[in-house]
Image (cartoon, rainbow, N blue to C red; front, top):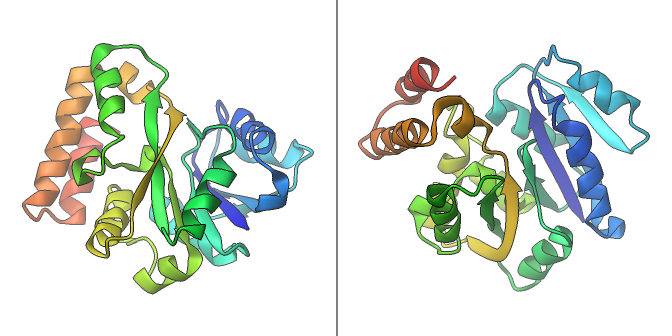
Amino acid sequence: MISIVIPVLNEAENIEKLLFHLIDNASLQNIQEIIVIDGGSVDGSQEIVKKLDLKVKLIHSKKGRARQMNIGASAAKGDILYFLHADSFPPTHYDKYIIEEIKQNNQAGCFRLTFNNNHWWLRLASWLTQFSWRACRGGDQSQFITKALFEDIGGFDESFTIYEDNILINELYKRKQFVVINKKIKTSDRLYKRHGIWKLQYHFWTIYVKKWFGASSENLHAYYLKHIA
């Protein structure tokens, strides 16, 4: 059974559409629960979740995606955790694809990625996500992981305000416990629209390189606040 864990902060634009998408594109007998962890939204996100006639568990938390996802994982009853960003929409039958990998003893992984934008660079970046290269991974691809493995790793590192997905993925690669499912999750290009494709890509590469050379979580967060947030 899969527990879907969604951290949100001011996601009124996406959360309703995402929740219906998750229900409409899965076999519900495979879904233990959907858990939304709100980090203090002020745009009505919480009210949207509450008013929907869906069996969705809403949890309140201090903001911080790593903290929110850890809280959601702690509350989860399923033996598979599926961490999902609020602006990313997994493929039809996503539940079956995940369970098939677990049955093959692949305890963690993600989907390929595509953007809702036809720009050639984003299409190329999406194409590259089919490969197992570490540099092609990111949180927008979503993350499934057995709860046992997640707890063994110790969950998300809450000292990282950004890059927390990559820290977990790094640990999974060290353990050789990562697989890329050859189906596409579609994610929003909203940050690229806000900053421009090349400018944002430059900042993402800079963060990646900074971490590669040992930058602290505080340093990465300061860079993110200055250039992206």
